[in-house]
Length: 79
Image 1 (spheres, rainbow, N blue to C red):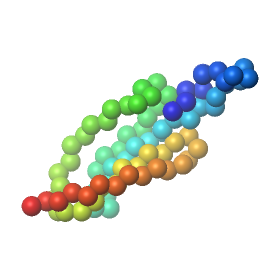
Image 2 (cartoon, one colour):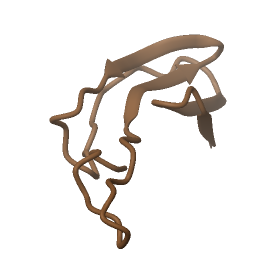
Image 3 (cartoon, rainbow, N blue to C red):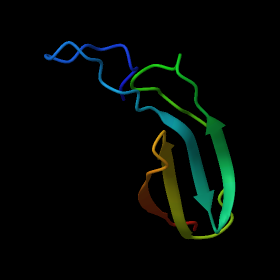
């Protein structure tokens, strides 16, 4: 993440590039979402709770200033 205040070697500033939104999707539904703002830490710690009712997958999605989306996936097993 870049705040937009860090100087480059040429004297300019690196453009701001921060994560604006985080989502967790379970069984096709968003179970947690957070809108992040410029004052957030560079490596924010996000914790939340949800209840898994069946085996499936979780999708973790981050959206940045440029609109780029990054996703990670994890499988869960309910017994």
